[in-house]
Amino acid sequence: MGERYEVRLSGYGGQGLILIGIILAEAVGLFEGKEVVQTQSYGPEARGGASRSEVVVSDQEIDYPKPLGLDLLLAMNQESLNLYAKDVKEGGIVVADSTYCDQFPLPGVVKIPFTRLARERLGREIVANIIALGTVGALSGIVGFENLKKAVLDRVPKGTEELNMKALELGWKLGKKAKGELAKRDKGEYIITAEEL
Image (tube, rainbow, N blue to C red; front, side, top):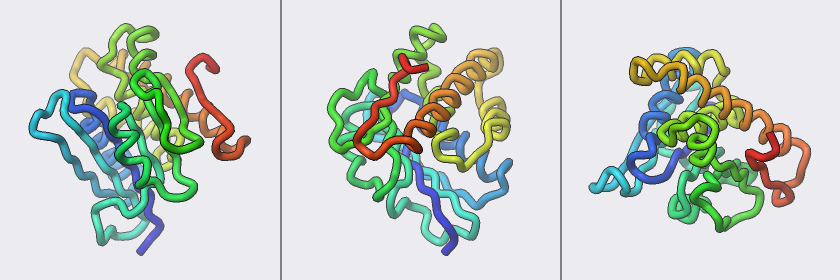
């Protein structure tokens, strides 16, 4: 089996996690030329219920489509963080939306208030998922910015391109900042907040 990189994007239904999972998979598979499998799960309530999207990336054919040990977990709410933190492998990255997460079950969580940033900096909470996608892309290293941008533009509704590009750029900057901090500090000794930008 080739080198795998496994991502889980989790939160409430209605936060756009399925969409960003599809975008990430398309960016990696179509534009980066890697093998990729994207799966999704959501509760019967859909909006407001549990939702998650998983993306498995490899340089070789993927023989098992589900994550075996997460390299990166995005938790957009407390319930997802509590539920899935245990699935992150040693040395993996946990990113939490600190707008909705205030208890952290393990050390070394990257805490970024995606929803608050979307509301305060961009005027629309609905793009919190795209900010988070930019952060995931930059932190993971599995996709370049231009390829992620192309995939976003292929999927977002017409007329929202400019707003979504601002969200993606903000998220990418946050991810680059977090990546730099992770490289400098030992696990458990850092918090990344938007105020640091």
